[in-house]
Image 1 (cartoon, rainbow, N blue to C red):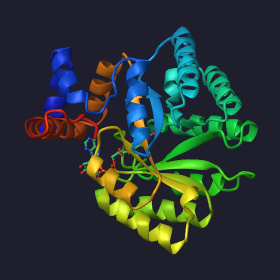
Image 2 (tube, protein in one colour; image 1 turned 30 degrees about the horizontal axis):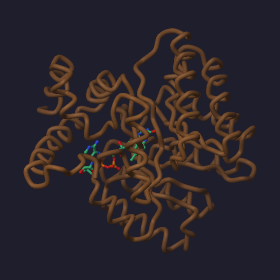
Image 3 (tube, rainbow, N blue to C red; image 1 turned 135 degrees about the horizontal axis):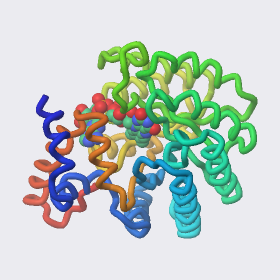
Length: 314
Ligand code: FDA
């Protein structure tokens, strides 16, 4: 209730104030900010996946512009020596305007990634997008195997069926990021119970490991991290067949713990001028995030008093 009220109020608060809350989770506005954050993570032995923030689009020209921005971004990052890949939200490339326009833009991005021996991860959005995103992924994976991956959301009732069907794709096996899912979905589409979602996450992960599919285990939930450790051990999964993934600024202590155990880690680094709309929209989609933001303010204030020079991300 409190989270929802705060989420509704935040868009009307001064941008500077929201930035105080948001900067822990967003690398900044410019490509230089994204590069700086990525280099810092690389120096800690952590890979990145770069996400250019974008607002809801209504016109094909905006999709074209976003594609151009991603192409430039890929150029900058791949030539700068940063160790990482790219995450893309298909709605930014026009998925909800015209499926084929979106496919065409994503194809260009994946083609460029393939030429640079890099990789594009297609983020999974709300349930109205799932079928189209799967369809685009299948087409691109057939043309550029090894250079495109998809996200699967453990809270969706359909995910195990999707996994079974995707695991039959011809070699090389696909590459998935498994996460809980962030959008608010109706109960006939998604499991709603917290523990039930966790159980489905581990079931999905077990299926993935059994089938020798590369996986990014994307969670900050200690219960799931421990459950993943057990499954990785059970299936004797080699360290180069999986990685853990976390969001920029979230649970750095757990992240350090996982890295210290010798597991690969990738951090999702969002940046861009649209951070304000992005932050407030995410809050509306999932008001629970508001409570994290408030908590972050206090943790940040506390850290500042103790170690004034400490970077907010680490
Ligand atoms: P949970 O929400 O239970 O969080 C566990 C603990 O982590 C919390 O108790 C809290 O301490 C901390 N925490 C979690 N989120 C926090 C936050 N924002 N701020 C501060 N603390 C936080 N979803 C989706 O639908 N499509 C996608 O493509 C992606 N992509 C993606 C990439 C990566 C790398 C990650 C880590 C996550 C995503 N997600 C996503 C989001 C995902 O679906 C999920 O909503 C969040 O990761 C939160 O779920 P957890 O598993 O972390 O558990």
